[in-house]
Length: 207
Image (tube, rainbow, N blue to C red; front, top):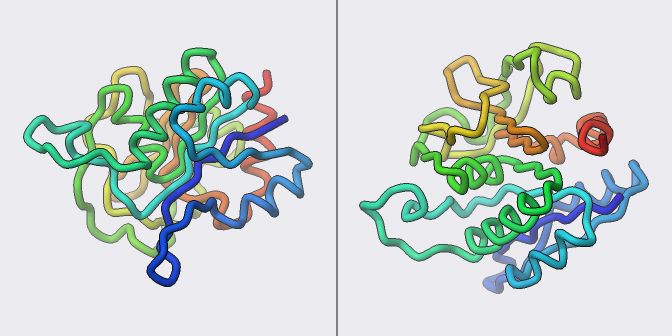
């Protein structure tokens, strides 16, 4: 089992570097799986040919408005280009995709949905979400209510037509979406070192 995990821009002492959340080292070691950090959009097809699951990580850099709103003409970011290339490559070969936080948002936009540009009360807090029973997310946790972390200002507005909503927060924010072998979650299971989430995810999408 090999995971492809997206790299992200990070500013360290006024210099940019590409990195992934350090928790993935612990998670992959615990589960005895290999991961490949991915940072080159033009290598997307090759990565999709050698990896089993794509994980689109979160980022403080928002999804570009031009991707879902014709009234804007801002530049696409490095993250936008990388994520789009990888989604296309993995979707084409029917391999599973997990989107985390920004990853959920970019999945929704890629398939035709839109985003709310700024939402209140979801930065740096914990809260409960309700999971629909008829979902892979419920099969992972076997619970209807779980407590999650939250660190985002964008959220799904119009849902892409291929997705179904499988979890929501008490204030109506969409917290999980699914379509066949694609799962997007608005929270960060890696930050909680949620080994069960990733172990069950792999079991579910290996089928």
